[in-house]
Image (cartoon, rainbow over all chains, first blue to last red; front, side):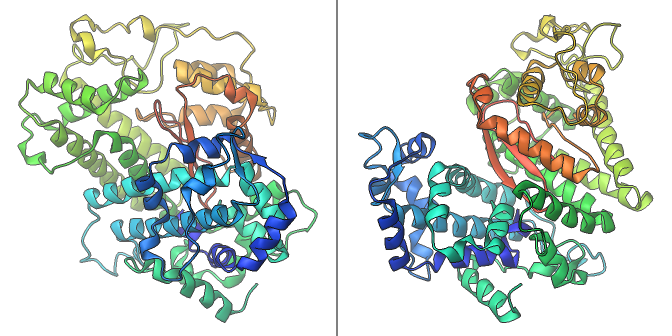
Length: 187
Length: 362
């Protein structure tokens, strides 16, 4: 997983996702019109999240690029009345933000996992770093504990109808073969 | 393929998010380290593939390319495998919440640890494995002498110790990964069984490796126990361990005929403990191999095959089940979560409740 997300193509995928402009997302909203995407799995998952859990998933506090922070209540607002609708013109930006934040948080978690495992360049070379400390199980467990909710969230989002629709409607740049391939590898 | 400065842009973008931990160079993170060329990295991502090819075939080719790295660096692969075992194990005991390093306080040695571990696995199997239940169980087992957290922690340490000893195998047979991984499994199995024997089979009965003709076992080395009534345990497997009824011919997997229904049946049989019986019935070598490596008591299903395209297809189909009506018909307590896939085409399915199913494709 670590290797996958730190591949340049995966990084490019995340980068390009994050760089989709607000104007482009507005274009997606217009394309959607009154179209409503039902996604009970995603909606149920989001509805059952406590605000604090959601905040942990998106971790806006450490966002250095000022990315759009998704709003949980906006995402689930229509679902109650419309039987699990999550993705529609009013949630495009929030859904997009949720996806990016989850991916970034996932990358962050995997990087921390790598640290806990003491992974580094040349770690497998016994001649190098022979005095390095062994990984501590307690560190690994803590990171894994932190990672699990993110993985769960990412899993739900990446297997959602909403994501499929979102990618179809996203700007052409996101649909390039390169990026599509990396998205398969990443997700 | 983007220019180097574009790649650097990508890396610069994500670096602030992972500032706590240094982001390893992509090349360094790949097996083969800096010897991996950019072209090889590109090939992982489908560069040069036919535009019209089906997407899963494209992915399978990419995975096969990555697998070639592994086949050329088998030592790394083994290390990676072991690390993932630890990862899996750590995930498994996550529910146990190892809190303190009280291992030194243990007075009864690793036998008790393994025994507890297997008890906990059985408890998970029975879907009654809350941490509170486990704590109660440990206190009963140890008559309150040992803190439950210490036992849980020691479980991990014991497992890591086993893993470390297994790494010695890498040097002895460096060119045969399959042999080494199989040997590793056998070593773990033997270690667990030996520990169980020392712990006393009167308390923790184990299904004998050679069962009477016509009787199915429940998995290699997997104990059958009911610690809620330890006194009732005998050398004979309890009723629940007796042969699992499997409709004849229903589970014959041949070639690529892994239909969704068949795979769903496989999951069911796995849950019912009839995996070895399936292995006897199936004519599919790969499935036999899959089942044969289910040797760890932490309920791991492993697909080990050299055919990457087939493996990718099997994985895809397995995953398809999880979103199909067939899966809907499976018991509700089965809550599979796809927790991640890697470029090594390792797909792990985390079963939130019980038991854990991990599908690995090499």
